[in-house]
Amino acid sequence: MRAVLITQTDPTPSVAVVDFDESLLVGDTLIAVEHSTINFKDAMVTMQGNRVARQSPLIGGVDLAGTILECPDPRFPVGSSVIVHGHQLGVARHGGFAERARVDTEWVIAVPPSMSTRSAMIAGTAGFTAMASMMKIMNAGIQPGDGPILVTGATGGVGSASVLLLAQAGYEVVASSGKRDESEYLESLGAERVIGRDEIDNNPERTLGSERWAAAIDCVGGPTLTAILRSLRYGGVVAASGLTAGSTLETTVFPFIVRAVSLLGIDAVEINTTERQAIWNELGSRLSKDDLERILDEEITLDDVPQKLEALRNGFMRGRVLITPDNS
Image (tube, rainbow, N blue to C red; front, side, top):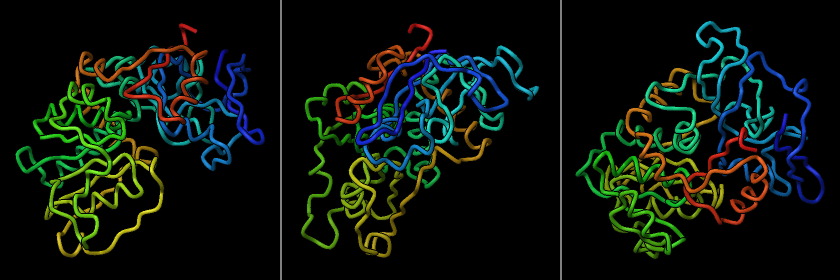
């Protein structure tokens, strides 16, 4: 079968499309991969000195959707449409950048009835993360009308899906991006305003900034997350899932003890199967096929994946990129 193989060579990992021996795949469930997609974690696996990849060589791809070819679980008969993402996929076990994949059965969940494998992978891990983030904000009691919701890294996969989901739910969305020329794109998804990264906190010299945001979905981390915490309104929450600006958080206790704000972590890797299925079902009920096509930037084949991973590493992607192995 054809696959995108990542090998941890010195000084830079190699990324190549190869003919791969399918007998080397491990797992009790065999899936014909119909679609995969590109996430920032996939790009991290190809970075020099990365600590993400735990196997080499490795077929990349941290998510996939396709059709069951073999499965011991009667819930997933042959021909069932399924999704796999997170766990060890594309990190410590061969992933979705291939024509077929083997996984452990407990990793498999059903494609929601309202979705196809194509729409599921336009959403992908990014859409799942955005939906999980919005559900955390809703469960914290933040409602439309409570104030603006900030989305950082808004042109990325999680950001684009978050803007779309929040706007359709009736929230006032403010999108933050370092790509100010993408304002038209973000407004087309429902953002009421687009601001730069340096506009999140308008009083950086003070102990706390002005109370601006009822909540935030942060896909960036680092100094950006610090700025959000300083500028949340009383009782505000931030759902954090990204680290493109850094993994270190430098803050004080003041946002938490003076304004009672909450920092909520979003995990898309080890979350249990029941919650995972519930989030996918919620996502499928909120976004139609046409909605998801709005965040699709490009559809590519396996042959295009190495170039797109490089583009993502260099910040030259927006929205979602869908991979269709059968077209390769």
